[in-house]
Image 1 (cartoon, rainbow, N blue to C red):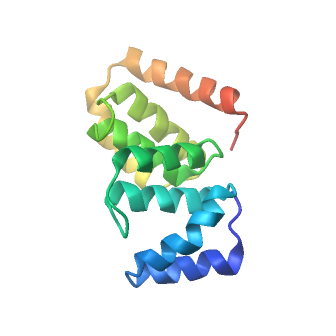
Image 2 (cartoon, rainbow, N blue to C red):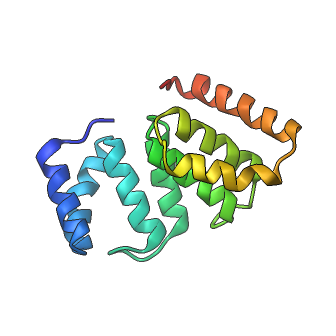
Length: 145
């Protein structure tokens, strides 16, 4: 989940100033080399159409690659996608699964808010199913907090 220090920071500065093309040009090679933070940011750029043509599916693909390394922001982003149903069918159990994982992997802000927003829509059986799916996800990908 490491970022290549100074280059990543240059991308972040460009992104924060709205220079999305420069950020993309810096982060894309890093993402291809497996940097989970760069993968998350490339996913966000595609998902939100920041400096690239908006493409939910491509954004989800990058979030998934990053999430499989335990990136909490990408885990949360996948949960949001399942909650909102953009490019994938709404699936509140899957959303809750990813929110639980995001929180467990260190997202102490967005994931808890999203869990609170989602819980009224789930019954105890669905909550248990999501907890078991989260456990299985960690075993499948060999990623643990």
